[in-house]
Image 1 (cartoon, helix red, strand yellow):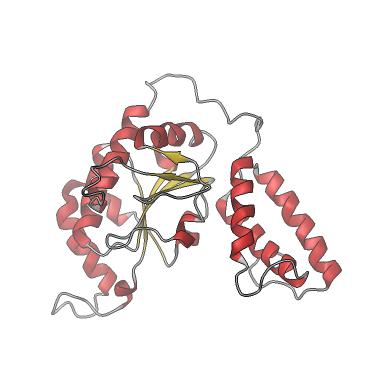
Image 2 (tube, rainbow, N blue to C red; image 1 turned 45 degrees about the vertical axis):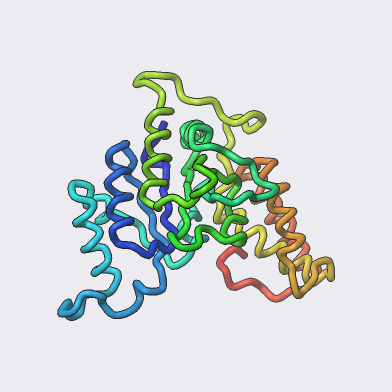
Length: 269
């Protein structure tokens, strides 16, 4: 296992205490890649009076360090992103956590999730996304994930605290780690030695697919994601390599030129 390739993503957390507690339990179980999608409040004025030029983000992280205690180095090294796509971009496989039933996604309990993270981290970066405390992950956010994980809880109260959910997953990852000196996990069947597709490349593919299929009149312009969501699930089940997704991107570029669509400004031309 490569713990440094396992990203735990907190999506727009509302509580500084939860951010600090999440960092603390990550360090308890040997994980270090903390990624935060900044909530809107981090762009506002400081919550703590008298902090002068200190930003709201710095103010929140300062309060999080008090809860993190000896894991404050994880907060110092945390990646802060403006949106979920950029937060998971380098990953090759992403699992979203939710207490809701989600159709069309492989469903995992924490132990199964940990096994997948250990296996897939041998081939590339992987990520687990935890939703914000009040509403969790939306359907659109879960569309960016190849699988979902639900922590079994009592039906009478199925909502878990954010940091506690991180603790459950981090514990299972540590438990699933192979003993020192064990042989690396095998690559997924059919992949051979090819690297798995990066999420940022897959997202570039869907952006181009929407432009091309929309111009061809295939997609409903009022709701293009309705059909694209099915294509997303199909590709996720195929578990493609980076080269395979790049081949699909190349095919869509050729179609764009044939349709004489304007060039995209996303750096993927």
